[in-house]
Image 1 (spheres, rainbow, N blue to C red):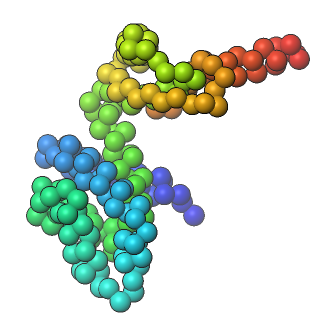
Image 2 (cartoon, one colour):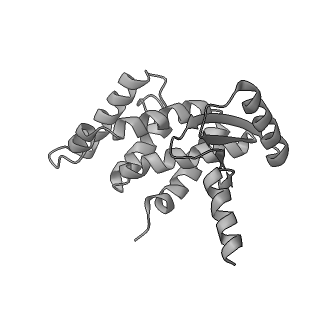
Image 3 (cartoon, rainbow, N blue to C red):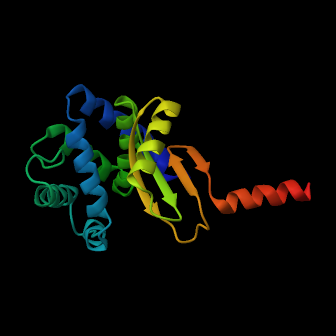
Length: 187
């Protein structure tokens, strides 16, 4: 059986292309992020799994949640026929559970289209502003893209940092260096 990422890919591609053509990428991005948050609520899932509710009632329930979360400008508020049809399609084929993966895939497609990349740095200690600027500049040069950088401290690291940029992982942690040294000494 296919995993959610495989199932989400064609849906994400289709909704991304439509939003790109209609200049609605930001609206779609905000709405998909809200969808991910909304569907993380167990009460919502329980209500959507209620067999007594018809598909149309589930669709109205969802669009009402989007209006409450974002406002009437939501891509899925019911005022956008394409957004409503997209939700209807997901409901019809029991694919609402892949909305979080659709959101993640759309964000990757959007980043690619905007020539930017999300980068996360986990470090043993807090990075200074100058260190962050230096890393950001080096990554921009290396990757040839605009960098959206987030940082977090990880107490499990002995020292150094681990940088994740899409599929690229740069492990500059002390633990990785010690493991490399141990492997060299054993060989």
